[in-house]
Length: 168
Image 1 (cartoon, rainbow, N blue to C red):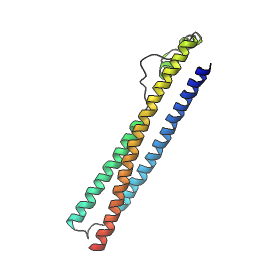
Image 2 (cartoon, helix red, strand yellow):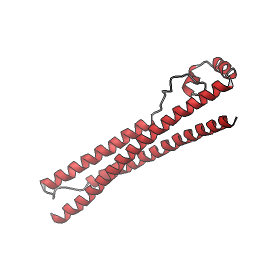
Image 3 (cartoon, rainbow, N blue to C red):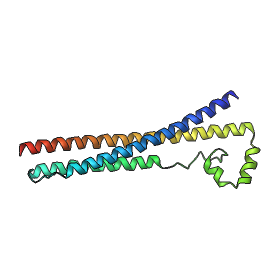
Image 4 (cartoon, one colour):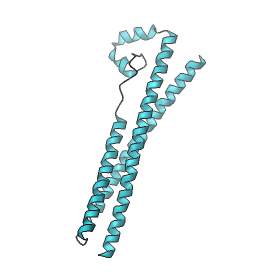
């Protein structure tokens, strides 16, 4: 009973981590949106007084920033996509396997499930969920990293525009 409670607690914690990762990924979407709006606002000011080199620098950095922002969004989208693959074993605790069974068949299988098999399936589900959480956090890290790069590039754009406006 002690190990069963421990593994159920572990499964709940892993599922909590997955939900937390999803919330953080949604926050990254908001930050990317704000950064794209900042680029749009920054791009509205005229570059007519800049030299050809100044225009090329601003254009290149803006393009790199846009690429970093779009890449961050794409990586974040991959992080939010549901994972439907499991360890390969059918489980009465995985929603995909549950939904594939007719209700009467599921009820029958669940009611006839012995303790050891149930514990093994919960342990497997915990392991599968842990792999999902790990993948989400890795993708979230990359999305955040790309967002930081985009933010730094935007800062360089702002500073470059100020410098170019003062010198020309």
